[in-house]
Image (cartoon, rainbow, N blue to C red; front, top):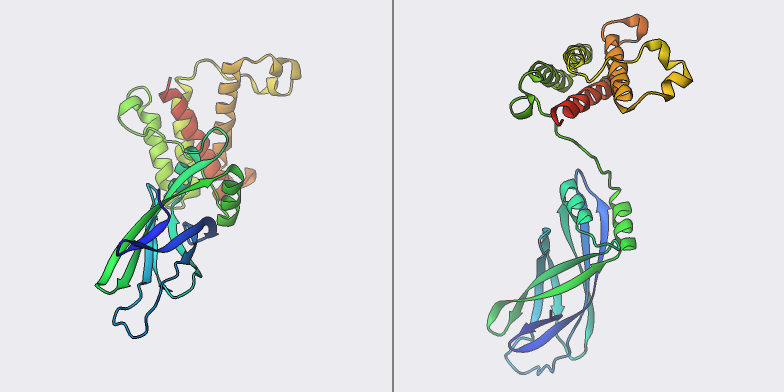
Length: 276
């Protein structure tokens, strides 16, 4: 790794620090790479025809992450060293942020490499120069970046709805779950609950045992004696009971958040049976 931009076999600007900051964007997390540097002193002869080299643009990429949008600058070499700085931005999707998080080491740190590319105007015209710089992101740095991004992570799980593991006897339940997901996309809440109820009716046929009697729920001793399978089928029965709310004003008409919860729980139960 070297930290000096070169031109005509001499160093013209040395990078003194690279810092990372963040800001939220629309659907993305904006990573800001702050580059601080010194342009090196250069003897200037006013009567000479040669133009002192100057850096006119800097870009690059965070290696294996995303490209940095180039910025126009005016870093000119003169008689004295001068401080310079530039902010380069890149845009990260939620998946890229999660991938970086998963790449962190045991102590929570993350080693990144920033590759910078500069365009230099010199006596022979425009030329390019590049440097690679390591950037260590500590656990506290990472927490700060997530805060600056206002990052909202979301977890998802895949639900089999056809083929593969959802052949008979799960194929009918999977078809109903697929229909429920379609109704959610069309904001047809009552219909989505109806499809969930049909799916749970099918899944009831393959559950590993009968659901505990409703009266057992109120009996603490009986409830605490339930095994894991008893608790599983009890939860399944509770979700099925919830799906009867679809068109019934007396027990509450279907609303978006309740329906989304019911669909998610129904899909999770299907996924459980399909993974056994």
